[in-house]
Length: 87
Image (cartoon, rainbow, N blue to C red; front, side, top):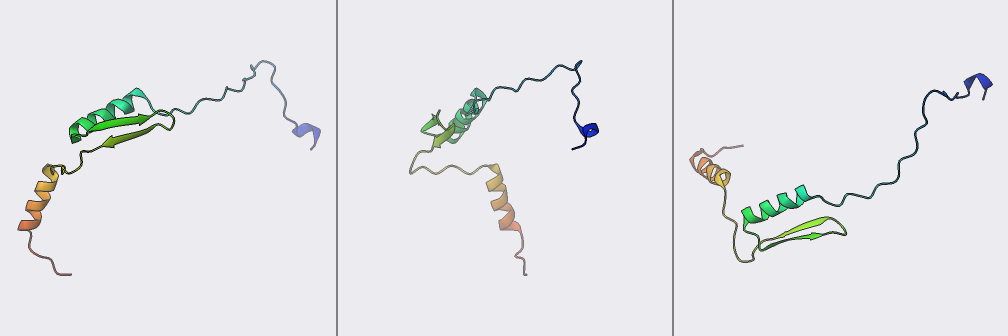
């Protein structure tokens, strides 16, 4: 490499030290609160968090179906009223 192409160091500019490695953020309190609210809204039996992997599990009760929401009811009514389409 030619001498005129070498990178010069600016003595007036402070050198940046390499940043230390960061730990992987597994989960935070905001995500845990959201999962808890979702679990309560769905009627979950429990919400578990694995701190090693950050996995959040929401356990729904068995044998109990989750009630449909307003969108499901609206789609059911719309499809009942709509004429059958031929392709």
